[in-house]
Image (cartoon, rainbow, N blue to C red; front, side, top):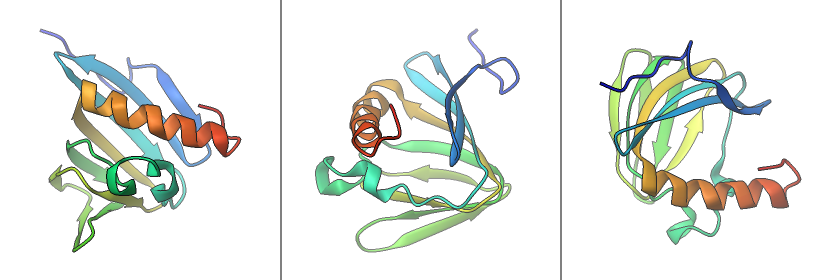
Length: 126
């Protein structure tokens, strides 16, 4: 049975705002993400429908707090909370947050292609 852990999954994203470790497990990607500072990545989703993330996610907040914003409401989760996030959201993350999140690999790849283009255009690499 495939598995992944934060200790054995290599760092693939390393920016001042996020450290991310990602592993594919049977059509889903598990993400181990750490946010050392407050992050509002909304501009990175520009170019997606509604300029919002279109990938669903299931996750657990291990520490800190994350808020997901839709056009008509927002939901906030703190340490110990498990969540499901429907497409059409924008995240807002507080300093010190760590999450373990599962996303369909194909949908995540489509979203990340746009995010990476926006990072590159901002001069942050991709």
